[in-house]
Image (tube, rainbow, N blue to C red; front, side, top):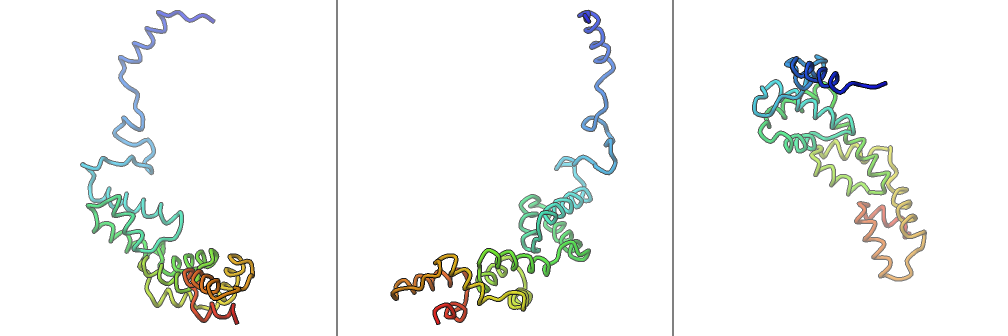
Length: 192
């Protein structure tokens, strides 16, 4: 099949003379009304910014649980001039049950427990993340976790069940377990 070059050029000119076709980028209305393109930062209205903040917050929450402090920090990096809208968004998400400090606390404690960290370290980390002390302590010290068994598992994995031969080795092992966040009572059960 041979194509005449002159005919092809005529078709291209005809298309160009009609103007650019309407696409999602060039049309004044989005093709899909549910998925609106983001307005530019300079001309965005307050409602547009609030919607984008909410959208980003929900995107973060869909990946994993976040504390309110974490959400506030991440959103304020993206929208530094809209702190009031961020606070409203976080409050709305908490009221709707999409963000929960309790769920975050449960997930965080379970995750750190699986990784071999003790209750003292987890409690300290939760404080840094803005979780209420009472909520954190309740979750850490509920009956779900046996911290004495956990310290034994961590010790077994790290030191392969070798009891220390001298005081220097014993203090090294105890420092490691204390660094991992286990209390002296929990650590002493290994050496008794």
